[in-house]
Length: 92
Image (tube, rainbow, N blue to C red; front, side):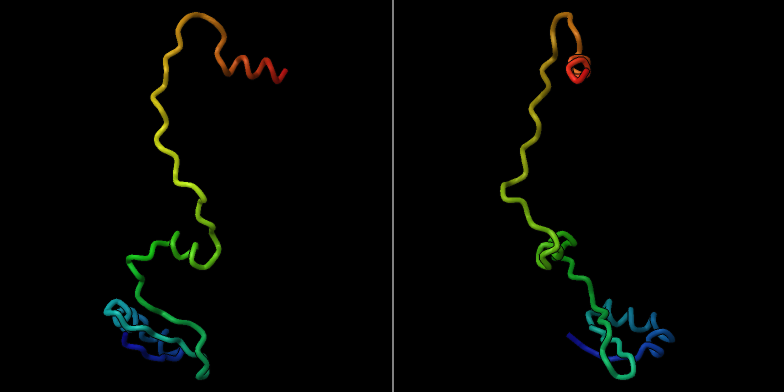
């Protein structure tokens, strides 16, 4: 990977040029008075946002796999109160 350093002022004046270099795969290290303060680089298409958060320890992946689709609903038969009405009555 091609790597270059650029000062903040130079970056601000020629941002489009440096973004074009990043698109080509280069990494741009931004410096402030010679001290590196930021890094611009291409986005890794294979690494999704979620995967990055897991890697950084911000998100913990689930311990068990995602649940399967819900079963098909069973139609109710007969007369009577709705379940929501019974819950509200129970809560009083």
